[in-house]
Length: 342
Ligand SMILES: NC(=O)c1ccc[n+]([C@@H]2O[C@H](COP(=O)([O-])OP(=O)(O)OC[C@H]3O[C@@H](n4cnc5c(N)ncnc54)[C@H](OP(=O)(O)O)[C@@H]3O)[C@@H](O)[C@H]2O)c1
Image 1: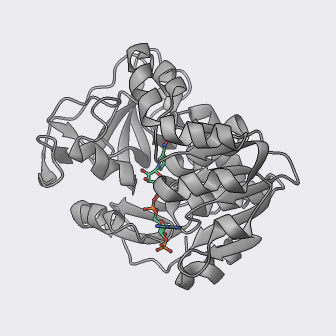
Image 2: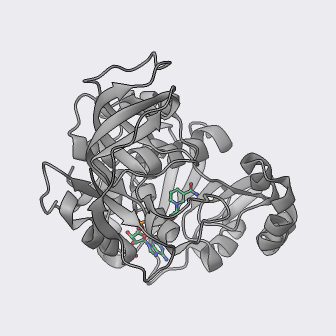
């Protein structure tokens, strides 16, 4: 099968288009013919080796975590899927390989794709929507009327998190650059702060929750806009000690405590909680997300669709950090999307 392969870790090591034997699904896996795959910033970070400690893939391996496609074979214990099913998934910690013609995925990480969406649209959803879901529903347990600040509202995570937060009945503020202000307002944001000309930390206060995909100064300033007892969720780090437990690597606790010492101290001083989130692959949540997509509540936001053969260019585009919504590679419907179209 054709695949995009990481031969060794390295930022400047090229991603190689090559041929590999087709994977064979194990007992609990389904084999999926990939029709479209979503690109995420983590793909380049994995290739660079930045996630070796958390996601230790042994090179050579196939890159890519989000996909939509058709089941072609199932392992002996698979009960929920059959060949011919149209599905979508984000791959779990131990797996990689969406940028290929075929990938084997544990059935617990797979769901039937939203029926009303194309393969490219479905491939735009899994990682960013699971992240938004696990932040707003699981971790923060937001309630109607809560005030939520979502940074980088025009990004892959931000553009879907705004829609989910509005569906959950919250008041949503977001940050973006001048050119995207009207665009994120159209996604549903109630308050939009242009980070090029305005300082959110002096404009917002008494928020219940912040979802931060940026880290650094933005994360540190975020503790100041949250009410005492509120929650700041970082998804771009730094990892906190609890994350070592989730990984099942308690020996990493001191390392993660050190990495997040400064932000946890700032949070404590402001009587708020800082919590790191790392998305968990979850087929049952993808089923709920599919229902919301089919009901028109969540709309995939696609910036560009590249052809499968242009996967390297698609990754470079995401690496610019300027995508508006998601970037997808497709075997069938590559086209230059209109910003905000799906
Ligand atoms: N922990 C997890 O499980 C998890 C899951 C998903 C993603 N992530 C991480 O979250 C981060 C974001 O992911 P993504 O898919 O949303 O990335 P993305 O789509 O590549 O984000 C690009 C967007 O970020 C915006 N942006 C950049 N700097 C900004 C700033 N200072 N203030 C406000 N907006 C800014 C840009 O808007 P402008 O052009 O207007 O600046 C652009 O639209 C990445 O680091 C990713 O690795 C983590």
